[in-house]
Length: 369
Image (cartoon, rainbow, N blue to C red; front, side, top):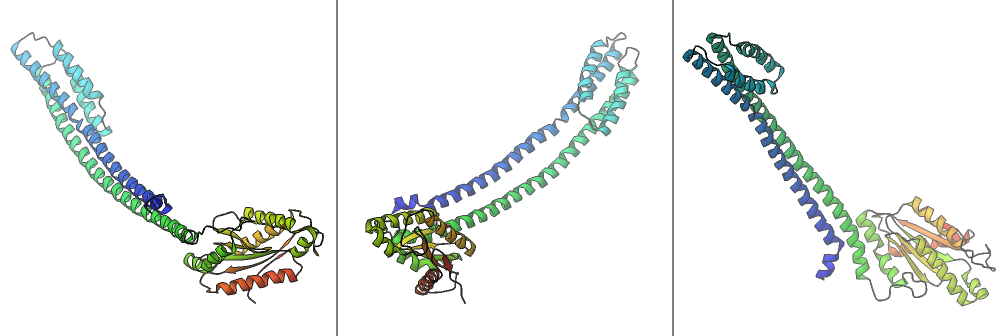
């Protein structure tokens, strides 16, 4: 029993639903963690605004060292100081700046460039130092403001993405659950029938179609399945025209060959899921179709009439054709109409009789007067 359960569609679909749910949840949390990583990276970039501040500190210290040198020595060699200032200022000046920042930096850039000559006096350097200190404070304010704005945007974005992901997971799971429930329901109802009534011999030995005993089991449960699934179902009864005359003319062996040929045609045509073909006895066949419509049924019956006729099995003593033909009667069971199986069979049989009365080699679908 356990092995059968593990091999069942129900078990596999249950496992599938768990896997899908876990995958969706995992993707949600992974996506959330990626947002956290993104935040750290961008945070690092914004903290990078303090690197230019360090450059400004270096420039400030170099100017102060230059002033000390000029106070100490009348002929102070300024070239090494100028070189260092140029190098550090170039790095800072080339860093990304917004339009408003660039306007501020350009003003200071002129002062710095003008100060890098041997004719400049100490007050000029002091003035540049003041401007550098202003830039340092300005950089700190900009960095703080940008980081604050980013954190607000990040917090809002993270919440938005996270809650949307949770909603997506919830909706996806509901849809998956509904689909799986629908599949399991349909599968179980017909599987129960198949397993419950699967006897050693459920097929007709000659035609290999389902036999009358199996027909009784399926047919008795047809209204139940129709009501449970809100399906329209059809019962079709078929009869080979003038089959007694055929046997009298060609013999019973040829009659068996013809029965097999007609059975094979029916089995080949009605080969989809929820389509069952039976040999009811003698030259009479039955078909049960689950989940169908009248337009589909009518098209099927037209095709079946033509398919049997196109076998071109000679029938000299048929009163309607030179080849073997069939007459058909059919009825559609509407869900929750609660028509008994006995009445369904009787009405289908009456429809078959009408087809024979009206000239045979045709179909009649029962319609309430």
